[in-house]
Length: 148
Image (cartoon, rainbow, N blue to C red; front, side, top):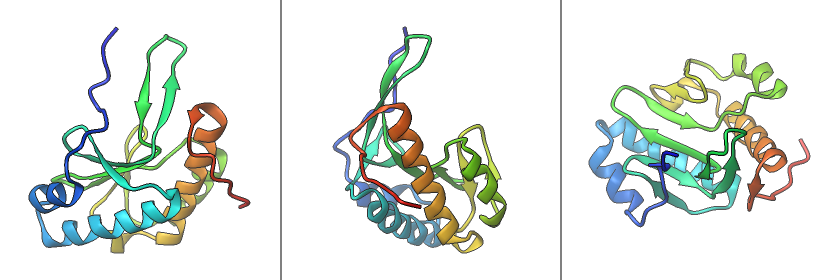
């Protein structure tokens, strides 16, 4: 079975952003996302693999037997857009996506060009919904409770 490539590392998050983000806007948005995701998770940002900034971790195991660890919430300031790994396919998440603003959707990833293009309170709701989903479906140290 293939080993997961994206693992938590000791790389410096600030150095990564300053060297990897390809515009001042992307750097600014990255540091703002750190504040938002850190506030929601209560976790310090950590590098996962060479280019993902994650918060907290959980253990997953698929029916196929493949298992590993992943960040609870994460993002990457990629060249074309900021990739947000904050989405879980739940009824609530799907119902509020239309209020998020200007974004593109991948399989489990939301792509935004700039934070100013999206509704930050909706982003926070999506994050909280994702944490709830992870809590219910995985072994997770993210037992923070949300009443929303």
